[in-house]
Structure formats: structure tokens, C-alpha cells
Image (cartoon, rainbow, N blue to C red; front, top):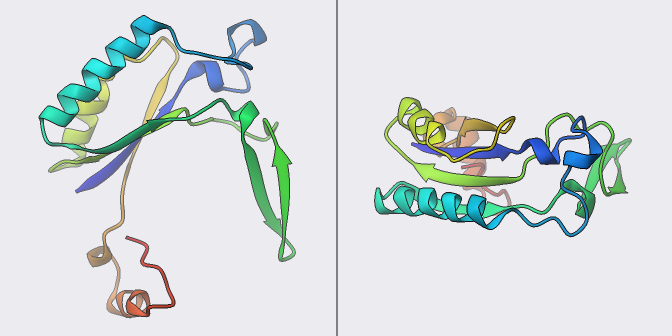
Length: 142
């Protein structure tokens, strides 16, 4: 079973006081990076890690919203954002409980949160959806 674990760091959240926010030029502390690297190595050694990446703060990003069939691009932070993702791990484990076990070991900071979501597999869908995904013009959701 594949799961994605999302890091939702307190320093990226819109409701975090400005003096605590990850702003322009943000770099995490070396000790935090070292602790995270150690965790990532344990995950890899266990054979559970598929991929991982950290993301720049929302101030460097953009959002594309769709309304009336037209895309609208907004640069930088969105005041509508409630929880901002700071990175992710894609893991392959036997169960949701095992994914939760790994998430509990993440060396997170006070106020950080981890969201765990199972990835769809083609076998999760009914036959008509599987058949539609077999169409070369349609990309598979899993």
C-alpha cells in the first residue's frame, strides 16, 4: 500500500505570527535538516521510501484556480490557504497503521503536523473506471 505523508510545518501557515514565519530566503536550521536526514535514511533502509522532497514556502509559489472554464493565476501566498504543505514522503508499507508509525517518528517541530493519505491503486476502482484508464488518451489515476 502506498501512502503519501505531507509535512505541514507551522512556519509555513498563514496564521503563524510574522516573526515566526518562513519568509524570503528561509533556510531550515542545520540541526533540523540533520535530524530529518537521519529519519529519511531509516525509512530508506527499511525499504519503505519511494520518494521525498521539501517545498519552498508558499510565497514563492502560485495557485491556478478554475472558474467558468478559465484558469486564474495568483502568485505568492493565498489568503484562502488554511494549511500549507512544506514537503512530502511517498512510502510503501503494509498498512495505514504502519504509515502512522512512521509519521510518529518524524522529527517535527512544535506545531508541525503530518497528514497521511493512501494513494489510489487501479484495483480500487470499478471495472468501467479501470477500462477508461486503459484508454491511451486518458492518464491513469493510480
